[in-house]
Length: 123
Length: 427
Image (cartoon, rainbow over all chains, first blue to last red; front, side, top):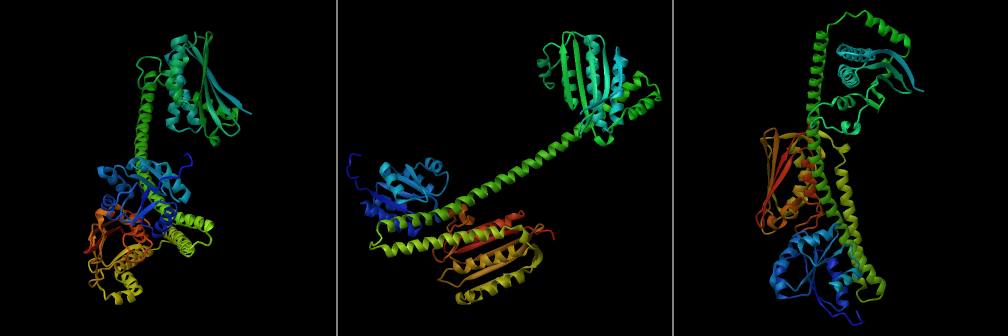
């Protein structure tokens, strides 16, 4: 980093917690990210093919669907091969799970915004 | 201080002396209150070593003594010879009797058969000590008692070598039988341990799943809390302050709710509070209906129940109450608002157990999507109504507590059927 401004990127947040979606979304927007949200993983793959994003922040344990399964499906789509997936979870072995489902990185809950920002910059 | 009371000493110069050493070993052990199998072990170890002394050194001498220590007592046999000593002692003692074929296992066996085994060997001879613990209560405390033993031996009839061999054979056979019984016992215990281990693994897996579910339910609101408070720190007068404060208070409420649910689960699993009674399905189900009467009326629900084929069960009262309570509450909460709610409850026999069937025509669940998370703690599959997500988890754990089980069938838009296999408790 040579003091250059980080290129604004597009991020899709997938989580079934409305409050969490709201805080993360509004803080990312403030930082200049283009932010989309999906509550609970419904129709995620379809949405992602229509609206391409750089990074997906994907919650691992949602009620209606499994985040790691969604991650696997995303990674199978050749059309989405440029999309990076960061999984989020309170699971203590999140690193292993991330490796198993092919995620590009992870953020351990409870997250602070700084941690999310750092993870997004690193990816 | 150790006190050693000598009993008797004699030379080992021929086969008959070896047999006598064996015989005296048996007798002194018996006089000291040692059981038959341990008598045989001690005597066998002695005769193995005496045979070595006789074969490798030509002759030897055996001393029997009682050793009294502070809190224990033992019989001690010391066999000494003036032979050439044992070369490669470590190698010999390392021989595996299951694999080694050939002579020279006497030492290995003798070491196994005694409680304590000591050996000193050199070019001028070998001394081996075999010790067998004896019960303190029956240990001879003085030379006087031992003299009594010896007098007793003087009166014993003379036994021929054949008789002696025969007796030893019988003793060894008894020992072998005892060892077989012990092997069987150990096998049974091993099976039991394997079984317990499996149960432990299962319960460990459940605990892991449970911890994971709790940590998720705690950490998501904690994330919101952390990010919202960071925002409020940086922008105390920002235009979204009000929204963030709302998030703070909601997150705190959710954390509180999770902690309360946790306490509820722990309370429920407190076995001290489980009262087993002869319960009547009609009565317990009526309690649940009474509790929800207002909601049943509002929904104009039709509740069809029939417990005629199995009217009751010996079960934990709070379990059965909770089962009906949770199922009825779910049926009412997740009913299909476009039609009248119909709930059907019935019982049937399944061997010595009771099959309880509870079905509704509510919104149903997409089991292909939900899979095994139906009964996971803190899992919620509908946004139609508020729920803590612990009802089905509790029901499943209590039914499985004593070996029962539960299965679920469900289709979106059609309804849900739970089948419980309830195992009666012993009153």
